[in-house]
Image 1 (cartoon, one colour):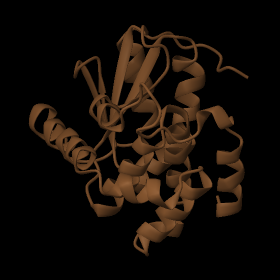
Image 2 (tube, rainbow, N blue to C red):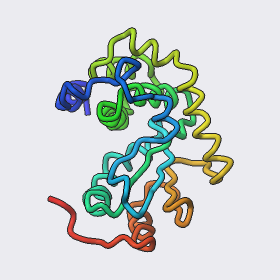
Image 3 (cartoon, rainbow, N blue to C red):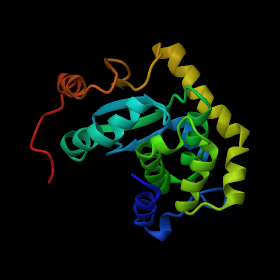
Amino acid sequence: MGLTAAALSLAALPLAAAPALAQDAGYDPVKAATEGVMIGDPKAPITVIEYASIACSHCGHFDAEILPKIKAEFIDSGQVKLIFRDYPLNAPGLRAAMLVHCGGPEKGKALKSVYFKTQAKWLNQDFLQHLTQTAKLAGMSQPQIDACLANKPLEDAIIQSQMVAAEKYKIDSTPTFLINEGAGRVNGANEQELIDALVKAGAKRGKPAG
C-alpha cells in the first residue's frame, strides 16, 4: 500500500473519529497502551492477546492476511475478542506504537493497519519521517505528533507492556498469541495453529461473513 492508498484508507474514517489526544474527554493514550487495543465484543467468551510489534514483518503479515479471516469467522460472530498489546522490540516499533495510541480508538486502529501495510516504506529507513507523514494523513498536526513522541508516561507504558509479557508469559518473539490467559498459546503468524487453538478453546467454526 502506497501513501496515496494510505491516505484514502485513513480519510475514509468519519471526522468524528479524529485523533484523540488530551482534548478528547474519556480517552487516555497511556491507559490505552496499558490495556491494549481490542477488537470484538468485550463480552466474548474467548480472549486472544496478541503480543506484537508494528515493526515486525510477521506481525504485518498476520494483520493483513490472517486477521481478516479470524475476524470474519470468530470475532464478528461474538465468540472471540482480540487484544493487541505492544511488544515493540526496537525504536521504530516503539515510536509507531506511541503514535497509534495517540491516534485514538478508531483512527489509532486504522493507523496501526496502515503502518503494518507500509512497513517497506519506513522500516530500516528514516522511520520517524515516514511515521510522521502517515500520522499527518490520519489528521494529526505536527504539534500533536511532537507532544505524542515526547510523552514519557506513554513510552514507559509501552515498554512496561513488553516487560510484563516477557516476565509473566515468557514472550520472546512476535507475534505471540495467548488464548484465555495462557490456556492456549501460538507462536508466530500460523493461521491453522491459531484456528486449532480457538476451536480447542470452544469456538465454533462457521462460514466467514461475506
